Amino acid sequence: MTNDAPLDAQSRSYVANLQRQIKKYFGHPDVNIDGGTPAIYIVPMDQPTVRVKYVAWDRPGETVRPLQAQWETVPLPDDLQPSTGDDGEAVVYQPSTGKMWEFWRVRRTGAKVVNSAGNTFPGGPYHHRRAATRGDRSHRRICPPETLGERWSYPAQRTDGSTYGADAIPEGAIFRLPATLNLDAMDMDPFARMIAKAVQKHGMILWDISGVVGFRAENPANKYPDGHPFWKEGGILRCPAGADATDPNNQVVYECWAPERLRGFPWDKLQALKTRIAK
Image (tube, rainbow, N blue to C red; front, top):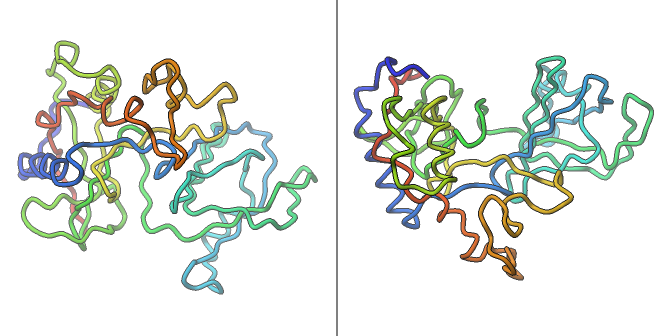
């Protein structure tokens, strides 16, 4: 990301707003890992395809033909596992065609479905309508609880925000850390530094609302047979030896708490690029 891109006139107030929301909502930022963030499946050119059915949760009989047409031949892997929680997200990317399919509330119907190779696909999936669609890399997406209502900024296509005021941040707003900022000289957790360097190089997009100001990690789903890369002992979140990463209610214990890994992230040094508000 170039350092000469113009800043938004509300850059300082937007950054102050983010910091205010961090204090207001739980007093810390967080990272979505297993829920609220998709697993990303990269499939080969010869991946067998399967039909994904569009279903609108509030209008089961509705069909959106242009969208359904794009889902007639989706190269879904057999082991596709959407994120936990209500979002049920999953992303399928096929480098050979340059195509990406992004799903929200994708679930298996349990019906018998045969893929393009003539094999039975385990539990044919269907898909609910997505509220908003935006494209960017995980770890460079930020979700605060409060965003601007009714209007949004490119590349966002719509908003689910409901707040107003001069400092209300539009969904689609892009933030950066100045290229001149020496992140290696700053005191922060290595995990926070990794994210900060990504934001400095590529920028960070505000893409949705959430219950806490949070980043999105790539959901590891069921792709790591030797253990969860975040929660396992010695994993990304540095769970100590002998620690059980989850309690009986599947809640992360403090020793492996993701917000601890965001210590030192330079929120106050962020800058908001000039927004392109939809009229």
